[in-house]
Image (cartoon, rainbow, N blue to C red):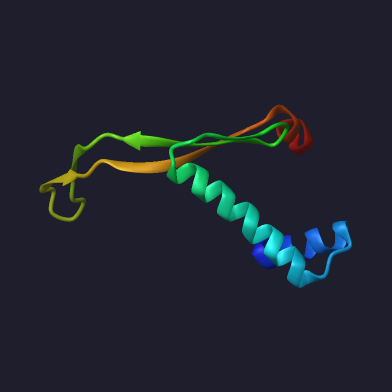
Length: 90
């Protein structure tokens, strides 16, 4: 499922026009993004949680040359599914 499929599903299930459903989906994504930028956890009960995690700087190797390279510290987003989502998938 891609974003357009999600918008179509939201429009069908909520009896909204696709344009309004697209605004709703974009607003949800934007709200999640803004919270994660502030390093806040986004907890959607029954669905799951989004949180940021910081990866420490480390030393790696270039696979072609074998030379050591420095990998900078970075922030990534982690998702932990909730019980209801796990049960629905199984």
